[in-house]
Image (cartoon, rainbow, N blue to C red; front, side, top):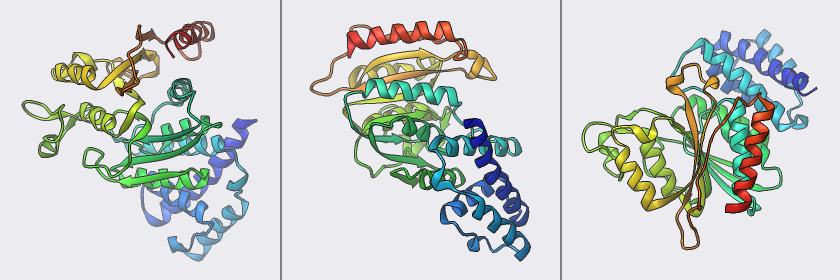
Length: 328
């Protein structure tokens, strides 16, 4: 049933995107951002389309009922549209966190933050918002005020449109996440870390985890920036490259972790999720040190089976529940 609803929302998006894309001569992704804003505003005057196309768009607006759609229908429909758009233009920084991983991170956030009824959440590499909205949609019993930061204006506009259609309390910032952030410390950070070198050597000078020579690793700097903007005792959930602790700059990172955070969990994701095993990732859960925090007696370590492999996955979840009862 949900699949049919998602398909309905996707068709509304896709039909509008194709019209806007062809008329404005822009990419599918750019047109998706315009379509999302159009459905939120419930008007298309701002697009200045020819009369015939404007009539087609108006018919779509009259058919759409975004106020009645479940949030997951809308999020998944946007996800499908983004995936279609990414086929048009391959862009290394426009990749989306797989849905199964987003849902698993949501599970972890709920488990680690079980005692909090109100949360502030930051995603410093928010992209289109898919990971953030996946988590927010699963925090049904919690009130969440959120922040998202993104340097790509097109992706940010898609996140903005989704936030409005999903009625989420979300502040979005169009900037380099490694420049100074003007936000209050948050309870939790979630981030699919952008992996690679940070080209701004001058900007990297402000970080403890800057490289001694050459370019610094952006993913290291993202971790430091995230810890800086987390409340003492708050939790951070990162998707990290499996080689994070084996890189040429890892010694500084290990010392930073020792000084600033408690490592709570390291969960290796199934390699089958990734097209190239060299790009396989893990989920790293950290807690920022505070006066009342303490390291777990044992770090939660696991190699996760395929999410579709029910029996091994249930076994892992049972082991995790045992760990939570003991440590939390």
